[in-house]
Length: 298
Ligand code: GUN
Image (cartoon, rainbow, N blue to C red):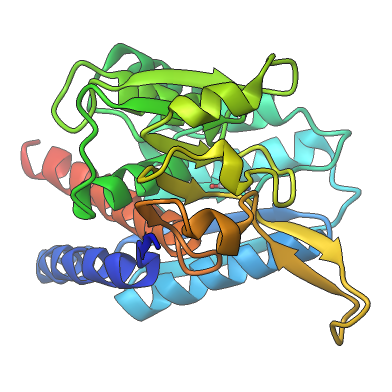
């Protein structure tokens, strides 16, 4: 039976470190500021942004949320981002994905000042991650998974890692983090996606299996090498006639059965989710520290 990787406890440990840094910033007269931008009425996005905002407030980050109508044009959204880029009290800007279809998300993410891009979605930050330049901001979910692995003493050097999913938010940056020539990386990384052949065969080779493709309960026990570390990024709503709301959330991993063969496994919820938020807070504080340091050396 695999041991649980307690994302909530590890996130709290990181929050304590972040709170100390916030206290230091405040002693220098700086309060970190984080702006959330949400477009439309996606219920999951509302929940996520609400959770991120509350955590920020708890830690002493000043948060503001800009909730825009579904009909907001790309030009209007770009205008708001430009205003936030110019606002010295805002150190981090997060535009919650997904955006409505009439808005070009790539253009929006590229409009955020890279120094305020606490999501790590700007092409400059994505490029820095690929190049192994540690100056940039790393996307929060893969950065959080990396911290989970490190703080759970999972050997990464030389490990076979299989990442299921090739999205820009998790899969691709996750692979880039773990294959870097650096400490806590140096893994052999395989990315599987919807067109991959023999996904189960790839999975069975993995020492670390990271499921981030958004397919409910995709990873079954017979796809997991005994003793492997399994990380479940999925948040999928499925129908359940027995549940009060007639639906419930499940991950990409068939948790109970996979746990029986895994060495370590993230619960879901309580695994990756809290770490995404912890990394957002840490990135925001880092953004504020960089501004503080730059103005001190002027
Ligand atoms: N949608 C799903 N995950 C994320 C995330 O980490 N950041 C943003 N901005 N949107 C998301």
